[in-house]
Length: 435
Image (cartoon, rainbow, N blue to C red; front, side):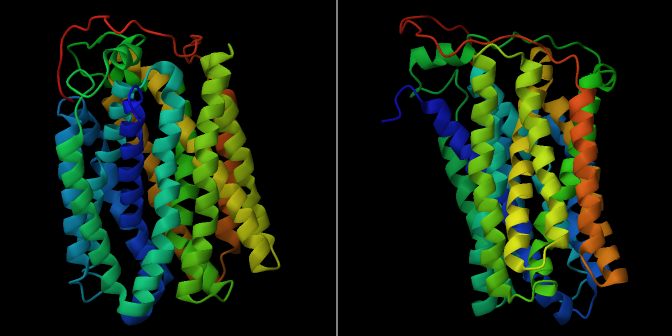
């Protein structure tokens, strides 16, 4: 059934790992209203807790990117998933808001390699003409995890206590770690990969051009990398605000129960999951039709951030239904643009063989937005008693991100890529290694 399409099984597994990563992140968001009351804390402190995993995630992101350039992703992904599981299990033992910081900081350390490892895996397994679709699948895992996690975790929290949600995510992480380690191989070493598909994967991958010196000078001088990073900062500010505060917003401003908010939260993310994949296919389609690489990526990047301006409608909506509708549009835009970020990153840095390092650079600096989103939102909600101002601020950053990508990206390679071609089954391949 999947003969000749094994690369898409790998891309699907990357999507699943991403979904698990975000289920591990949203578990605290679902439990937050209960923990705020149980630990006698407030929105400002909860904002710090919701943001805390991004502190270590960002701190370790660049080193994690360097590790991806040196360690097999088969091993690195498995170890990362084990750390996620330990973090979830430790969370069940906390008895105060202060001690809750420990497992959340550990989660950030464990999740630091996950994005660079995903990009490395997709770059190893997909030809250039399919990378935007692969990247959109990876990023759609964000939406899938954020769609599946809230209703299931809200049910567990409501029926069995908040600790049950963290036990469930810990077991899930352990299971996925075991399956990934047993199943994954690099395309040069995968015995179930047909020779034709192997040649398709490798036909337009650039040979390594690694320099002996550290790559940071080249990366820091690259205009497009800074443009991507600036827009990504804005995107992650909005994304993490949604991931961490959406359930509380629906409970506090829209008067929903924990269980109802869990199901309502899943609606924007479910739509975003579909739109994210379609956005990647649109970018790859434009590339195959002769549109320059730059414009093929910018169509999705800028379009997604423009759609995210619907956050204004959420802030001003007079009913929960309208608010959720506007949230759905903006969330779909954010997830769609997020996939194109990583496709554009691959286009820029793959030829340098510095995919992990550049991804870590973009992800690390961009994640400052992810750090600030939950903190600023919590502080403003605590000060004003409303989510109005934080939502308007998020909309303003969507506009800034659209401008950064629309006018800041100019030098992305403009290679035009044809669609998949038939490769002779007996074509040879030299070398082999397991990433």
